[in-house]
Image (cartoon, rainbow, N blue to C red):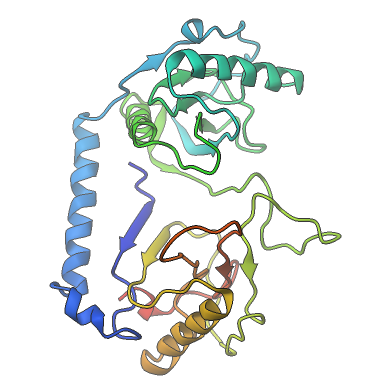
Length: 310
């Protein structure tokens, strides 16, 4: 499991907005939190007992890789884990995924790299494909290649997330890496978006395709706040899914974020809105436009108020 990432679902704002919250919740939020942490503990114990593992490992020979060109060795166990999602290589079985990997390896070598960039790749078919392996440095992330394992999803349809089979295979691969001593049990997983800084100003109005649409505080009329600064980098990411009101249009979402800020500042006596980046989640249907991410406290920036996670 990715232990550094705790996902708190339906434990967010319960006192503001739609009163239906109280009617639909049978448990106190703290009881729900205890249940969630209990589930996380069970998953961690499952990993410790070694009950999850790699279901299907496809060797380099099996997928038709060219000879290894990389030789720099990793000092194991490494302390960092890098995961990427490689787009545009749709495949759904070992035959087609092997062909896609041969294409990817050729592309990487033509770019001047010594081999395919990753230590292992997980196909949408649920197979784990050997890249340069456990002991050799990849060429996936500048500054981290010699201290990390680089893993990647591939094979998904355009606009889709990895399949359940792929997610399960990735979980097993990471668990196996920890159990076999390739990855430290207290590994760190840095967050990257294709090497771009999504918070830096755009140059010449260029669009950063890897970045979400971030609505700055001034654009949603945020109130002035004075929260203390937090130490960087943060050690954990906490995702909270708020319940109640939804929004489907930019104007509606701006009002909703304003109301969330008012709840924290006026009713909870907090210094600001309780989140770094509230993200719009459309209640129905899809949209050709990217869902905006509203800049709350931002990053780097102030420390979250104590009432941020009730």
